[in-house]
Length: 122
Image (tube, rainbow, N blue to C red; front, top):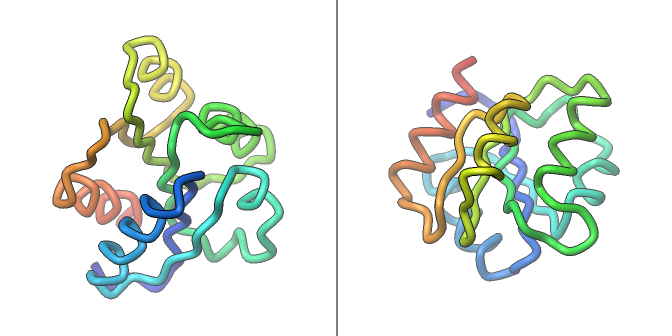
């Protein structure tokens, strides 16, 4: 993985954010971390974001709500969901709205890195 772009990591749990951040940076990729969807939406460098890795269940704005806002704003960026509470309904909704992957926590590191590589290769 060598494309220069930011991988946006959105999760309300700082330990998860830090863990995903370390994993992604270990592959030589740049990251930007956000505690919630509203933070990402207010980020001034959205054109630099090549992929969003987001939790599904977060206070304030869920991952699905974030995805809806991204679509509404016309921001064409691949979204990878992660959740400790996967349901077929949430997965179907995310995928129907264009999500690239829907991963269950704890996320397999290789599976996440493969998803990110596929996303930024687009």
